[in-house]
Length: 193
Image 1 (cartoon, rainbow, N blue to C red):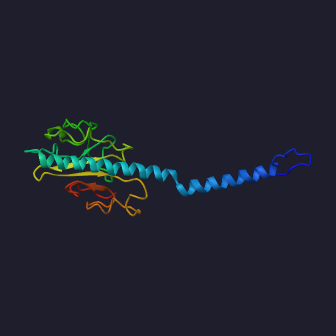
Image 2: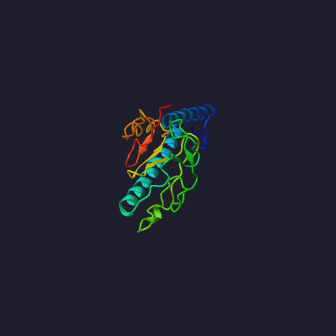
Image 3: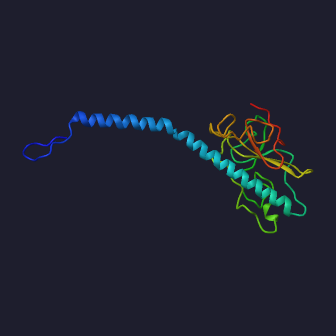
């Protein structure tokens, strides 16, 4: 910007404005490519999945340790939450239960947490943040051994098998492409797809 001799200021030239706009466009493109907002959204959903299943697992462990005659519910078949008709990461069928009430045996986790004398530690059973055919939760149990497993499929490059914070292959379960937790990871036999 230059000053005229009579004291009036002269504005930016069109060329200067175009150069500034081009620089801003290049910088914003670089920021979008480096930050990859879609991947961060996937990571946020995966973090929610991990939190949800940890809360359910803690509630089930409390149930098993505090109820005199615990019943893990329907153990004959794998139960899936909303969106699921096959076990996460597999092709085997599961029974879809859309319920989330911790007082009903018709929820996707078929345990009545309200039988805990101090009350249920969670208000409801959570639903996967995506809830579709690929991303949903699964529950399976063994009534004779009082063991259970909870499953979810990770979607971000960070948390899935081979990622920087791989949660699927390092969980102690029997499928390296599914996150398995509970007091018996590996209870559900999931053929890899």
